[in-house]
Length: 485
Image (cartoon, rainbow, N blue to C red):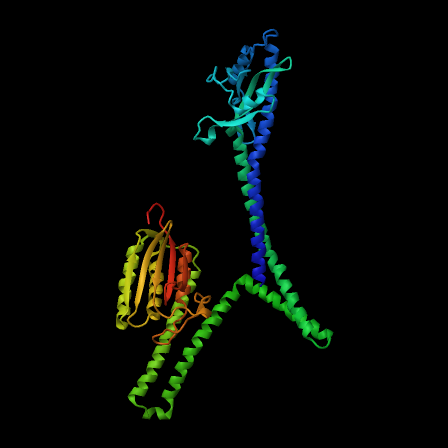
C-alpha cells in the first residue's frame, strides 16, 4: 500500500509538471512574437513620420530617396552585438512603402517595386484606418522563411495617402524562443528528477513512519488495559524493527531473504520425498523388498534429486539474468530462422505424444539482441505449450510483423489458463499441473522469458486464446532499425 501511494504521488507529480512544461512551451512562441510585433509597431510609425516630413505639401506625393539612402546606410553599417547567445552582425529589417492604392513605391529589398500589395492584410487594413499586420513565408514550403510585417499609415492633413510596412524575419527572434523552449525542458526535467529523488529519499523517513504509526495505533487499540511499561516496550521494539527494515532495504537483504524463503519452500517437498524413500530402504523389512519396489523407491530419489537440481539451476540462471542491466552480446537475429530452429528442436520432444508443431511466418526481418537468450525464451514458450497440449494436439508458432514490432505467437489447444491463475503465471515458482502427467514444473520458465523480453526492450503476454480452447503466448520484440518487417 505504501509503495502504491508513493507511485501514485510521483505519477500525479509527473503528470502535473509535464502539463505545466507543455503549457509553458506552448506559450513561449506567442510571447516572443508579441514582443517583436510591439517593436515593429514603433519602428513603422517612426519611419512613417520620417516619410511625412519629406512629402510634397501640395500634391501629397510620397518621396522616398531619404528613406532609401537611410536603409542602404543601415544595411552597410558594420557592427557586432552579442545578445546572450546570439552574435548579431547585420540589420534584418525590411521596409516597403505603398501609395494610397496599395502599389509599392519603395522596397528595401528591391524586388517588388510597382507590385500591387493592396491585398496584403497589413496594407489593406492600414489603408482603411485599422491596425494591419501579417506573417508571410518567402518560400511557401519552408516555415523558416516566414517574415512578420506591421503597417503604419502615412498621413497628410489627416488623410491616409500611403502605408509604410516594416518586416522582420521570424527566424531572427525564433532562435530565442527555441533556446527558451530548450531551457524550459531542461529545467523541467531536472526539477522532476530532483523532486522524484527527494520523494524516494523522503519515503524512507515519511512513508515508513506513517505505516509505523498505523501499526502502533492498531496495537494500542487492541489492548484492553493501559500498561505504560508494556506500551513503551512495544514502541521500542517497533522502532528497532523500523531501523532493521531500513538497513535491510539499503543492503538489499529483503530481496535475498525472499529468494531464500521461496527456494527453501520449493526444495522442502522433494527433500521430504527423498528422505522418506531413503528411510524405507534402510528399514529391516527392506531386505524382503522385491526388485521392482526397490527400483520404484530409487526412481523416486533420482526424480526428486533431479527436480532439486533443475530448480537450483534455473534459479541461478534467473538470478544471473536479473542482475544484468544490459545485454553483453548484441547482434542481428533473423526471427524466421530462429522460429524454424526452435520448432525443429521441439518436434523431437512432441513426437512421443503425437503433438505436431507447425510454423507460420507472415513476415521476415531481424531484431537486435542475444540469439542464445532469445532462442531460450521462444523454446520455453513452445515447451510450455507442448506440456499443456493434449495427446495428438497441435502447437502453432506464428511470426508476425506490426510496424516497428515483431510478434512471436505460440498457440496450444490445451485447457487454457484458469481464472484464478491469470494474474500469477509470471510469478516465480508459480506453476500449474500438466494435464498429461499432473506434475508441476519449477515455475521459473515464464519468469525467465519475462526477464529476457525486458532485456530486449520487449514484452511477454500470456492469455487464453480468443478463438477457442488453449492458451496464446505473445512475445513482442522491436525490429532491427532500417530493416523492413
